[in-house]
Length: 252
Ligand code: SAH
Image 1 (cartoon, rainbow, N blue to C red):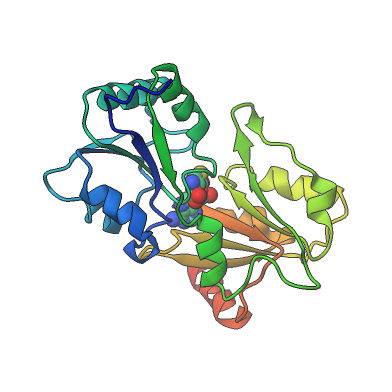
Image 2: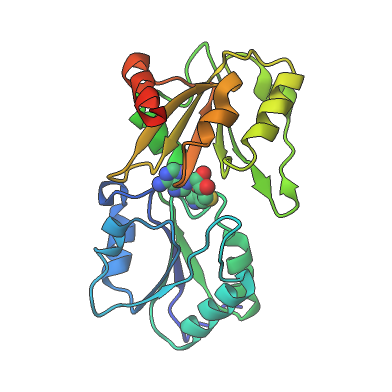
């Protein structure tokens, strides 16, 4: 049973960066919050919309880098909720995609605390828009995969045969370190080496960058990337020429 002495915690997705990708619901939740617990992936533009009187707690994590342990985040969340204030747990993109949302929900449930979820725009949606493409297309792909390059056990295994089928589209999150592994698996399962793979770095941020690659050049191309990036496997920028020249510039 949820404890109604405390307001429900709001889990919110901040979108990939730009304030223009924030929903009105999340915006309003930020305006009325007492405390916002946020990740490193939340864009500066969104953080700037949090009123100065609202307390901010940064529990940012970077892949393989310094991180706040999930247990500490869970404990912070419960502690803040039990202090009686309105708590917003703000995560980059959509809070329900690779956001460890369930672990935090379970921590609240164990403490008898209620919650609501306000989803956000996920990086893949905004990345596809940035390259002028849709994620599904009649006659090309009737489904979309969203996969992670690595999970807690290391490089993640997937239905490589399905992903390798011509025309299929897969958005690969956290795929930088695993690019060579993914490349090898897909080649092994018969994917064409010239299948487009577009890397979109810092989606919807001032330093957004599009790197056009193919399955063949993917591992080499990710070396150019240092910010958060999503790989749109199976999609090329609609205007391939300018994006390719950008790759050349980046390599120069
Ligand atoms: N909940 C997030 C995903 C978090 S997992 C979402 O829905 O977008 C972290 C991964 O998301 C990163 O490694 C990267 O692959 C992707 N990502 C998140 N924000 C991004 C951004 N602004 N630009 C590019 N990729 C991003």
